[in-house]
Length: 386
Ligand SMILES: Nc1ncnc2c1ncn2[C@@H]1O[C@H](COP(=O)(O)OP(=O)(O)OP(=O)(O)O)[C@@H](O)[C@H]1O
Ligand SMILES: [Mg+2]
Image 1 (cartoon, rainbow, N blue to C red):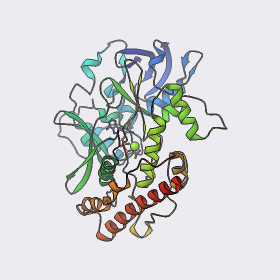
Image 2: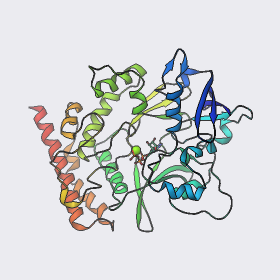
Image 3: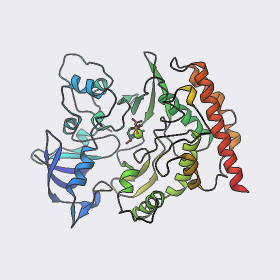
Image 4: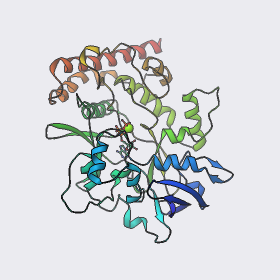
């Protein structure tokens, strides 16, 4: 079936898409290539079909999403790519969508920023059956990324992302909240604020959408692929070079902050999908780095208490294998006000004590661990000075 790939109101390319498999069979016509997703390679003026397919299929819920089998059974769908066309590929993180050429639609009438949407898919993703009525599959949950259970929900008129943790400690939502506290104390300019909600004794983090109808979130992964990497450049250098080419302001300073922050929380999962930049979809001008989100995979969230070693080698992403190595890319650490962090462990303890999944020895180790990370970073800041 022929669709026009749209970036909000702008037609970008015409595509022949197999609705069942979500495969792009052919690029029919190129209309406004400037408005293509960042990182799509263009060969002789035509966007590369494989690259477009990777991007398009990558919009579907990853097959590794926790609880996806059960959700697909509830929705009576065989695989997540089939959900893409049910919502025209619309998302709450950008403005791309596919418009059927035969019966064109208007963005105003179908986008999820201004129109309400059903909770059916979100509920199925949380393992809940909706009533017997026919399910409404027009949902931004169809295009949500990441492996933790999550759903978009309209709460008091705001589009919010509700995200669960993982067994056995269900710690990720609590980590998102302590990360928010740390950002506030460190006076960070740009972070996503997470709060905690409990449902049936299970903790969830809730954050508001950071994207507006005029903007899109572009992953560091897409940015990284926008140029061919030369062998003599490191990943860090290549990424900054891509930002410079694209005209994204403020990325170096942002990374200085992000790397120090991830060192503090011993984040093991800052892959290229977990940070990025925000672009205006009408003017294609860059606002700058995206506010920091997804910091839950940190603070030994999946480690049993006995193996929590805050001074040990802690693996990290995306530029170096360990935090000890990666922190050297962050440059000067003078800007950190360590006095603002002096009692952070106490705030963490209060947060942890609310959770039935975290016993006292674990809470002790985690608080001690966080304090120890702060001390190590302070020591590094001092060494850097002398
Ligand atoms: N506040 C937000 N506003 C808009 N989009 C968001 C927001 N938070 C997350 N997203 C989008 O949703 C995706 C999934 O969210 P998130 O990274 O928090 O989930 P996750 O399951 O923890 O991911 P991972 O697989 O990296 O652990 C993000 O990669 C981003 O594209
Ligand atoms: Mg993520």
